[in-house]
Amino acid sequence: YKDTMLKSTLRHMESIELTGEGSARLTFSEPDAYAYLTNAALNDGCIPKHIWESHVGGDDYYDYMEEDASIGCGAYKLISRDLDAGTMYFEAIPQNNYHGEITVDSVTVKSYANQEDVLMALINGEVDCYYRYSSPVSHTLIGLLDGEENIDPGKSYNSGQNQITFGMSRPAFSDYQMRLAATKAFNWELLASLIGGEYGEIPNTSLLAPSCIGFNADLPKFERNLEEANQILDEAGYKDVTGDGLREFPDGSEMKILVVPQYSSDMSLRNRIAEILIDNLKEAGIDAYVDESIITNDEIWEENIEKENYDIAIGYTTVGVAKNSTAFRYYVADLQADAVEKNAQTQQSSTWTWGAYHDPDFTEHVWNMVEATSPEEYVNGLQWLQQEANDVLFGTSLCWEMAFYPFRTDKIEGWNNWMSWGVVNNDTWTSLHAK
Image 1: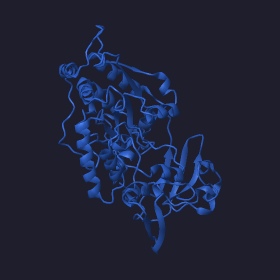
Image 2: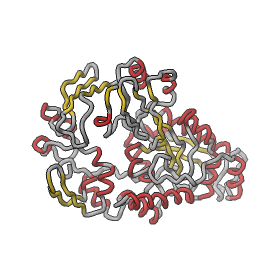
Image 3: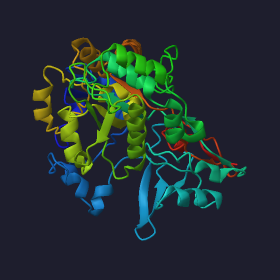
Image 4: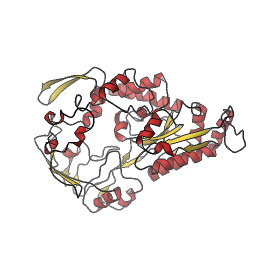
């Protein structure tokens, strides 16, 4: 993984020492072990060296489709596949029981065009559970399962979230009073309803979801107060000088706020979020707009974000990032001192420095949290960062959402619904039993 696939999570690994059958000691030159074991180790399976060693760097190994590409040491082996039906069949390898006795003899993986089809397959008993990375069933569809006594909706708090970043390197939101006024102007109830439906909750100032380790529930929740927002702006000198109903900068120059939704294949939700934010700001006399040229493709969008060409950026933290790096990883604006050299060595093209808060203490705390060496150090770092999010308002969560990963309960028992992840997890293959 380190030398062939150039895994950034292993860039500081110096040696591997076999310490016994099925055990080894990995030594890192930097404090990456905790982050690696709590995150990447769950996603990096063993791979056969004789197949992959010729694919150094790049994405060549992803395209290798020969029969020996399936060689591995997992708990299941691929028996057959039906590409037309989008179905794969696996059988257990009982001796590969390093996580415990394997109780699931075979697994059939079916692919569907959309979530509606998945739910109908669940209702009809064609499948037993649903999983897709960081893509729980939409709250707009979960009602299809109402009255289905044999289906558990798999409800839990989602650690992933929609969020915004204030462009603090640009004139408007470099001012704390502008950031504070914006949060007072936002219609939090409407945002929560749009994003999470009847299950959506107004977030607090922590920038984390309640399901994240170390979450601080004592910080205040956001609350709309348009009158207070207007008062803050008036007192800060942002007044309507020209009489057109829109505020200018304190020096009298025109003020236009650039809102940039994160590019994705489906922009409908983020575009609707942008519309709400723009409407809310206009109610406070602030002119805001979306530049369509920035969201034509992923590369153009990221180039603008990394150059901090935005006043408000609308983004998303996935479940995998939330698990260890948290949403704060997307708010950091500066790399570690030696990161440029590290990225060159690992051939990383994206650094994800999408934030605009250039504060040394904040930067240091983010990277220390990411590279924590113990749970205590990790949580302590998060406590500082959440308080900083509250005090500075460099960004906000937009909604606390619920995750739905439904599963049938009539034939199988022993499901373990991981919060924001669902029932398809490490425990599934050793905990399930037929009723």
